[in-house]
Amino acid sequence: MLRQVFKPIRDEVSQVWTRDIFRDVFVNQVSQLTRPEDYINHSLYFEAKTFLHGLLTVEDKLSMAHSLETRVPFLDNDLVDFAMRLPVSVKLRNLGEVVRLNENEPGGKTAKYFKKTNDGKLLLRQVMARYIPSDIAEADKQGFSAPDASWFKGESIDYVRREILNRQAWLYEYLDYDTVSNLVMEHLEGRQNRRLLVWSLLNVEWWLKKFLK
Image (cartoon, rainbow, N blue to C red; front, side, top):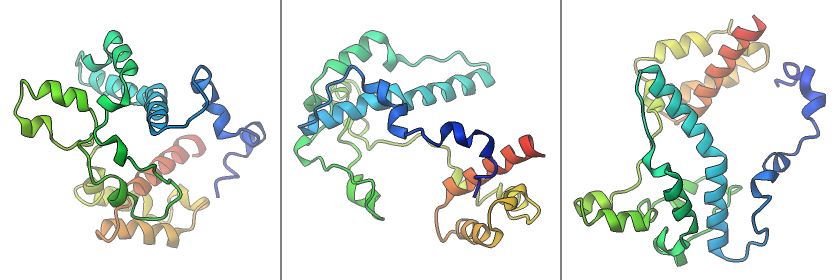
């Protein structure tokens, strides 16, 4: 749908394969993956070399925006090097029960794969249990995402309606209004959690206003 928007650069990127973008990440890594430990180590390495960069950028910008000088002690160079050398058996509990996630499996992945959320950080949990209550040391992992699902249905609902449920929005030069509005209303009425879709639509609308207006 947005092909026309990106037509000026389409010829430059049309032959790019996503795997090529990340090829250098694994250039010095063993390519043969035979054990569950290999997949886990490669996954952790990949996250550290890609996704972590984005998290640190967000942390840096948010802290500077509020005049805060922050630190990330778990990313001390020596500590990271130590953690990278540790065997998976001291990082992840119940290694034998690990199930390889099938990203192409439709629906229900969260319930099937992520019910147990306190298996990770095993060594850290064991060390911290010496100093803090066990219910904290063994607590489930908690995400650090913004509560945008409730934001888009709460105090920001009028803003969402004004920006992306407006037939005059720039979005609808490229997208079908009825399709988008039905999906967004499912979120606003609490029938589906489509926070990522709403967030994406808002960003596309802002981008179109800024660069194509």
